[in-house]
Amino acid sequence: MTFQAPKGTFDWMPPRSEWALAVREGLSAPLRRAGYGYIETPTFEDTALFSRGVGESTDIVSKEMYTFESRGGQSLTLRPEGTAGVMRAVLEHGLQGGPLPVKLWYSGSYFRYERAQAGRYRHFSQVGAEAVGAEDPALDAELIVLAADGYAALGLRGVRLLINSLGCKECRPAYRAALQEFLRGLDLDEPTRRRVEINPLRVLDDKRPEVRAQLTGAPLVTDHLCGACKAYHEEVRGLLSAAGVAYADDPRLVRGLDYYTRTTFEFLHDGLGAQSAVGGGGRYDGLSEMIGGPALPSVGWALGVDRTVLAMEAEGLLGERPRHLDVFAVPLGEEARRRIFPLVSELRRAGLAVDMAFGGRGVKGAMKAADRSGARYAMILGDRDIEAGAVQVKDLTTADQTAVPLAEVVDVLKGKVS
Ligand code: HAM
Image 1 (cartoon, rainbow, N blue to C red):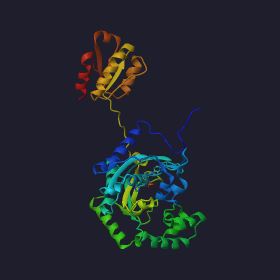
Image 2: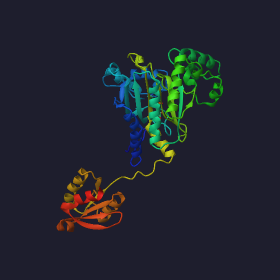
Image 3: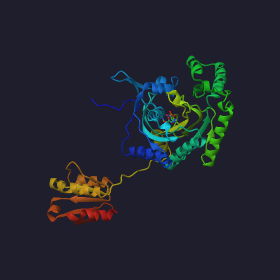
Image 4: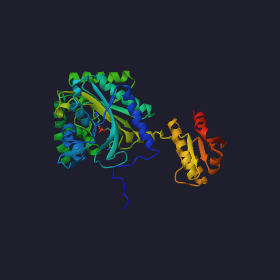
């Protein structure tokens, strides 16, 4: 019997896996330069952290969580997102008592039991950032600029930014009521009518054409913002423009998590089909209180690593990333293997990239492996070389071959490569 990766999951395999690493590195580098510290939290948390933090009425909590009972009888859930866990850790470690904002970044695996399709997986990977404990439009703008810079550094040109404000606990209730009143007058099926009562903003996000057609006259959140939210949003927009980051206003942008307040945003890429969001985030001023902490206004985002690689592929950016190898060692026989093995280790310790032929292949097979390896030099050792106290160094680009005394080969190769 053989096994396959579970539905909705896949393996990152070389050489493509190099791009997953490059994306994680490329998206996190701007954060590290901006003072964000690295945080790792557990892959599973108390189930209630997500039901209270992300929200009972969201698809994520109501349909998509991988929840299980531990042997000790506790309900645990594989994290569907990173923000709730980061906030839990900040509160648990009392960081809110120190200098604010606490700026953190993370990278890891997330789990949602979604309908699997291209770009939508049940196990996916994000790079995320959270700035906890400050209400300052410059912080919202900083995060958005850092995400845009990350995409740009990867060479992506087709990432679009949509922004919106969802208001605060002062102005959102009146908007919610106005929207509900509008939605109750529409011709909607039963599940959607129920959604109108529980989470009316999510109905604005309905993709079905028959629903979309009826939403044209829906009240817009941006027309219901209080003075403070309006001013805050204007300030964020102004800072983005000043930093040269292009955006489009989308008053219908709602996000799939309940904790958002004020600034929300999404990065889209048009080369991905239906799953066009490569990243998203926003302000979540109430999350800390929702999970039992003090008031801690915060903002953050998460960018999808898998979808970012797909976006790079759509833009033709996934060219060859040649494996960099300086030397490929070819031992011909057991004695040669014994002699060459310490040389390989020594060359590696000297900083060279070195591989060797394994599995006792003959000369032909081993030389083929050397050619395929992409190395600059082959270091070949046979019985006659051992007798002569030398090793053959072959330049694999020119095919020139010279005998070098065994005792000198490390220095000779170091000299050639540097
Ligand atoms: P999110 O919009 O649910 O936000 O996810 C962020 C990004 O993760 C998406 O834009 C997408 O690129 C990627 N993603 C999400 N689900 C999947 C999936 N099933 N397959 C592949 N990629 C996926 C959050 O997770 C929030 N925690 C972001 C945040 C941080 N807000 C404030 N701070």
